[in-house]
Length: 412
Image 1 (cartoon, rainbow, N blue to C red):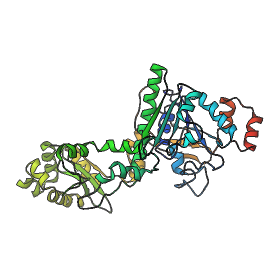
Image 2: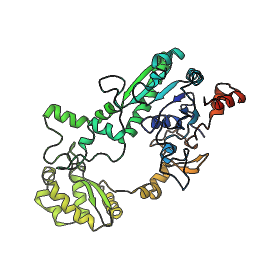
Image 3: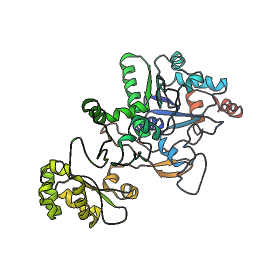
Image 4: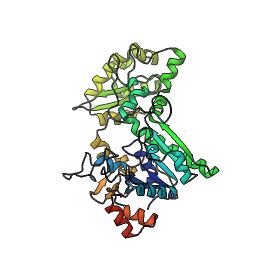
């Protein structure tokens, strides 16, 4: 059954990639009618993920890109040529019937097309317009264009990641695309709550880089209050906990090729339990007797622990520590997390959807369940222009012949 939590909300959606598409994806899973608008001339290439790998099999094509299909489940898809006046008029009619206009183009793109917030508000006074770009729509950097890894570097996140005496490690994937999408979804919901209470729409201007900067709170506080730079002897060490100080706290190699285990001791009780499981002489040495001593000697402590973990299978070692009350877990590879983890299966984290071109495939679910209005993901992402008849005919009331004419004229 489709979730009904947001079934009263319609979103006119220009979002792409994940920083934007991930936001409307979240809301679509809770029942919002998300109408994704794409360009028929560029064959949907506003979103560079459309038609790009990974693919589920040997087939290739504009509708078969795995990342695009994952990020756009439960949405409707239409094509609309906004270079034409008729296309712009159809967009005005769609905006008039929508609650939200969402986009994550670079600064000013929608305004240059003639759809600034002021114009959108003239079409529908209570519209909620949410824009999400690298630096927002104000300030000296607003015209710069960004990408997830660039956002992470500029926000300071990349600087905080790595090992002592090594260069910043980066994040390996577009972390701020995911986080930016979540914050954008929250922003849309907050603006809708305000509209429900006041009847007033508004423009929500979001900067992904500033969103990333807010995630550096402890490091920023340490600098501003204590004058301590993040990069100093022994810092940063992304495997260790500084706030609060914990030791041991890290990732340790285990038996096998590229196999690892995470272990953390929160307090003396955990340390004593850890020592009983490991049962090696180093656990009784005075140099590791207190938290302060272990923090001061973490390199030596990690080396001793690694001797124990390297001789053991990571799952078995984790289970032994867990049974003693020590936080520990095997570092899971994708196959282990997706296909072999019983909790993941029970949660339903990777539901199967039906895609009109691909068929059955698994996609990301949502990391939350609501007892009364839970999410539902059953329909795959739209093929290019798949729902033109449904939207232009059913919603805007155009006849089949009018829709056919629009297609012949290149409007849709």
